[in-house]
Length: 164
Image (cartoon, rainbow, N blue to C red; front, side):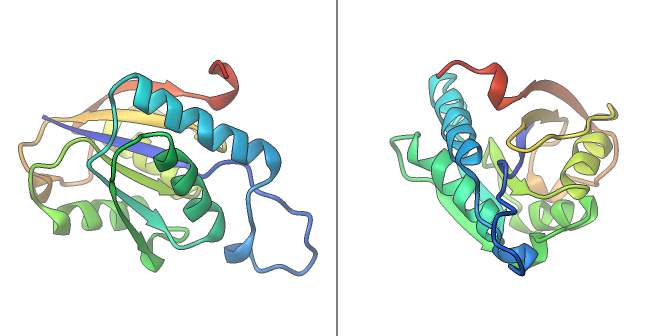
């Protein structure tokens, strides 16, 4: 069994007119929520071994805030292909990674992140900004992932429902 943590980037800012979507930063709530999710993962001893993230500013910032709460080094790989990626792109990244690492985390954007949770768990889930889902997959190594309903949604955490 492998565990995949799927996170949508935290709340982003629309305050800078003309800024490219890829370059939008987090707003203050997003900064707070990214820290909350990192703290939750550390407290629950659910720290990922590896994280794959989009290269967008808001996903990189979210990932940095989450990792900062762990107190241990975590391998983070940013990939342009994960910017507005489809569920199949995430599956291909995990498949290519191979190995037995678990849990592994992906941080990305909608609609792909919501679709990934839905496809892998068989449960429809619209991921809001900063939300985190944990999916248990019935595979032994990541190269066995197929990108179809093969897992079980363990839990979903929304930052605003977490304590500070």
